[in-house]
Amino acid sequence: MALNPAYEAIGKGFVQQYYALFDDPNERSKLVNLYNTETSFMTFEGIQLQGALKIMEKLSALTFQKINRIITSVDSQPMFDGGVLINVLGRLKADEDPPLSFSQTFILKPLGSTYYCQHDIFRLGLHDTS
Image (tube, rainbow, N blue to C red; front, side):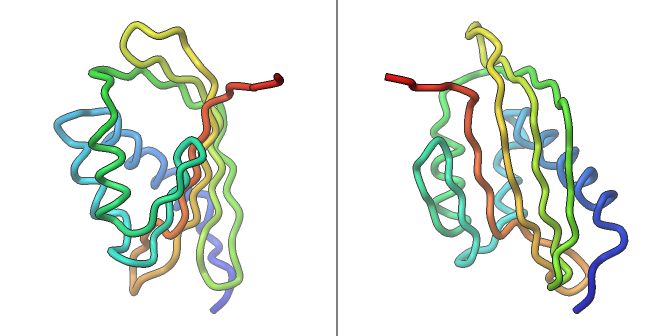
């Protein structure tokens, strides 16, 4: 497979779709369609999960009711297998918590004429320096 020349548009489109679903509690369950049943991995604040079911269990267990998000940057790179590497930097505010920086990295893998999220790493910008 060759490098996908549309990697930037794919990255930006995926990020827009992902956060539109994630940030709406009534739509969040649809994120399951972006992950593979067995081969998707997520690391969420240091906790590693494998498979769409485990990933959705974690996302469904999040307790906030509302989220406001500002995306600062979306950087994408093509991968030699036709996939796309995406790095997102931004700020989010959940419920009445103070706004926090976050970073999220995705690797999209081609699956026929579409993509699925094979890797997803999320981390709040908290620095434990003790």
